[in-house]
Amino acid sequence: MKYVGRTKVGKAKTNPNTVLAIVKLPVKLKDFAGKWAHIWKVDENTVVIKFSDAKEIG
Image (cartoon, rainbow, N blue to C red; front, side, top):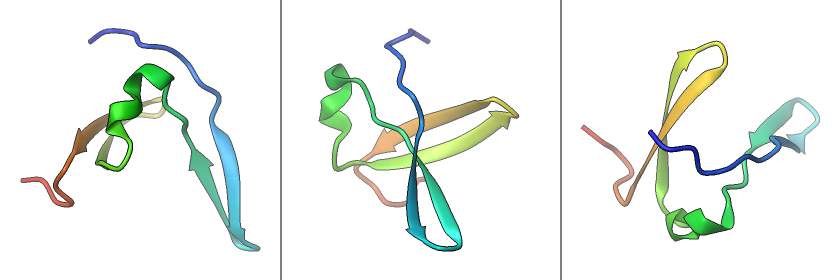
């Protein structure tokens, strides 16, 4: 793995009962815009994100 930058996780309140965590990627990763993000939780403070053109991965 290679460190590519940092960002602060923001919040978006979609309705009175739902708050989403929003992550903005660094500009150098702009080519991932519009792709699907597949997310795995590794442990309490670590997630792995794999970007894909496919909605489902197998």
